[in-house]
Image (cartoon, rainbow, N blue to C red; front, top):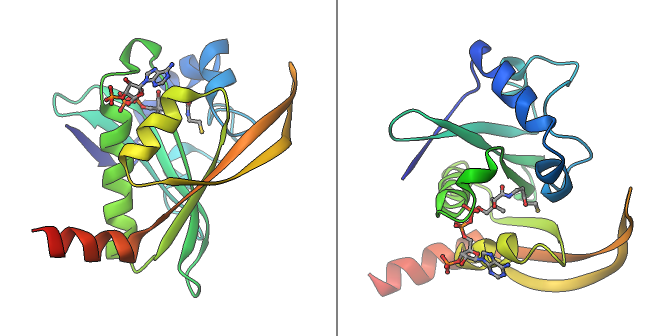
Length: 171
Ligand SMILES: CC(C)(COP(=O)(O)OP(=O)(O)OC[C@H]1O[C@@H](n2cnc3c(N)ncnc32)[C@H](O)[C@@H]1OP(=O)(O)O)[C@@H](O)C(=O)NCCC(=O)NCCS
């Protein structure tokens, strides 16, 4: 349903548009959407400790990006972030497909567990993460400060090794 790929030089303008959409910015977990980063997007893809991939439809329409950050190669852990920059493409299954794809890449590269934080009000994201195998571990009260005030967060994790075992025993 989606293809992960590296960012290309021509992607910058589109990502900048996403960064100017207040609803995208409000939903995204990071402090700022990628636009305006000091490092060009193409170079972000090559940064150590981080796997960042753009994703697009099979027709080649750029939708957003998905990222594993703070990768601890020895302990096998990483943190996930995702953003579909086009609001008119939310709720169509693309985010779930992109997360599944990067989790498959994470497992292939030897990672064993992935965690994420998400605003408790962001029920669409939580539903999507649950479909990818993430489970809630804790609520972090007032876990993040935003312009609108303090926000409760949900900490979710997925055990990639357990997922691979249950997939192979099921099939
Ligand atoms: C979060 C995000 C990646 C999810 O991707 P998506 O393609 O929109 O989500 P999907 O369509 O794959 O799945 C969404 C699920 O949530 C459900 N959903 C939608 N709105 C919902 C709501 N208000 N409450 C509960 N569930 C909801 C949908 O029904 C769907 O589940 P279903 O397939 O079982 O019907 C995407 O919406 C996005 O990038 N949003 C903006 C940035 C963001 O929120 N990032 C995450 C920050 S942690």
